[in-house]
Amino acid sequence: MNDLEYITNSNVPWECFENKTFFVTGATGLLGSILIKSLLKKNKKIRIIALTRKQPAMENKDLSFIYGDIAQKLKIDEPIDYIVHGANPTASKEFIDHPVETIKTIYEGTLNTLELAKEKNVKSYLYLSSMEVYTDMNTTSARSCYPEGKRLAENLCASYFHEYKVNAKIARLAQTFGAGIDIENDNRVFAQFARAAKEKKDIVLRTKGDTVRSYCYTTDAITAMLWILARGEGGEFYDVASKVPPTSIYDMAKCFEKVVFDIAESAEKLGYPPAKEIILDTAKLESLGWEPDKSIEEGGIKEMCRRVVEWKTFV
Image 1 (tube, rainbow, N blue to C red):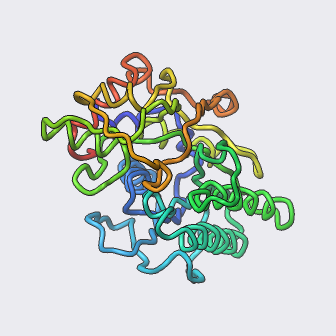
Image 2: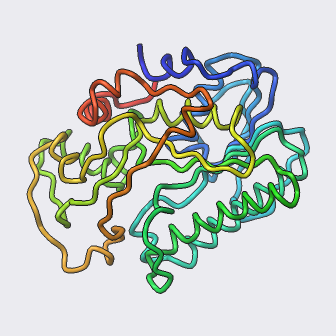
């Protein structure tokens, strides 16, 4: 069974989404594109409106695109039942080079989508947040624009829920990767590792790689997102991670290829967050009815890495 079949055959409460309309931002990103493909494949007469800045490779009679900037006010005439807001900066180097633009995009994009949710009186709104909200607060570090922006966005969700009764929920995602990442152009750490493995090159670590994190494979991320949309409580957050042991970046790198070190003088200047152990707790998510991908749970981080390298596209 491939990843897309796993999602569409999972125990997600699909009946909640039948004959409904989704609005998805970040439609060409890893999770946005997989979410759209999963909804269309399930064939529950789901209509999808997707916001993107570039022409995507997807075509379907139940899928239409709006081209624009998430930082601009959104105008959509037709009714919307569900909103998934996943359009956020992801490149760590950009956080250092453009911290003002990073935090503005996070804030303005979340504000605009929440305003749309309020206007359309949606059944459910989901914000894709990050485990980085658990990092130490250092408001004088430019690199903090990303976690501080995420915290602000989460508070906006909670505020819209309490003041305007917008049924907004938050998915705090562990480091998420899987089949379908753009290995050639994505510069996040797992994509760099996969690229080195495909090219049979050593992985060069610029830090000791001692940061320990929870990780999430894309199948678990998508099913979790749908469960939170359908059954999650407004104003609440849910940690999202696969059922694999927390792993250091160094140990993860070893799953891909041989590792060598070239320690940088300042990891922060390269965009890396401070070394920290971040372990997510999925108990609240599981209480909704979500179940992890058993094949990932059994194979662990090595199985996640294998799929990334061997499966070029998400099918």
